[in-house]
Length: 273
Image 1 (cartoon, rainbow, N blue to C red):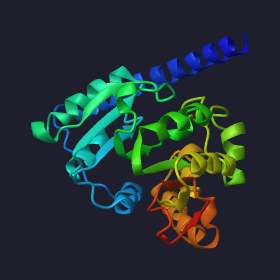
Image 2 (cartoon, helix red, strand yellow):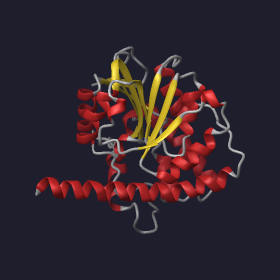
Image 3 (spheres, rainbow, N blue to C red):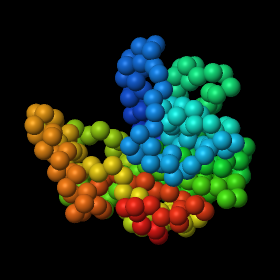
Image 4 (tube, rainbow, N blue to C red):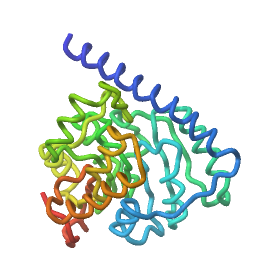
């Protein structure tokens, strides 16, 4: 009985996630207007690519790939094979359209699949697991054993995620987001990663290193509460984040979680689990 209830809850959660990103993909489709061009990996994504190093000859699974932006960047970086995976069919339609701008031999492929359910053809297939805001949408107890099985020996994983380390941001998410005129930009089921979550990831994916990402604290408050009211206020928030990144580095909402054999090489602003 308990398993049946958990199964129904899981199905409901995945349907909510798919519906949210199906709707979001419509905006991406209208913004492309037939002139989408893949960009370059900077900021947090650039740091992830730097950590991975040379991708030539590598097979990469892009988790929760959405409309394909990161999948295209991975394909352009020389990976032998890139598969983008998501539960949102509409998002994948956008991704396939975007991939058409690349040469046929360079294009990633896209698959609709639930990452909490094993995919037999992917067992031991990938050198790299890549995720941009992926894990905090998933049930880690279910997905991590599955994901670890997809990696080849010596495989590595890197994820850009949201962090639960900042108590003020945790309080704001719980009590302000979606209320009092404060918009919700994510889904109701997502949740930033806690230290316990990071320990769980480390256990399943061969140890992990947590790298403080592009600092975002006051800028989130600027977006969520001040609604970018003025350029001057936004500038003050950005400058404040620069100062806070030195005094309170663990307060950032964004973290990069790097797992696998290369995770012990040491990166400034990082710590290992």
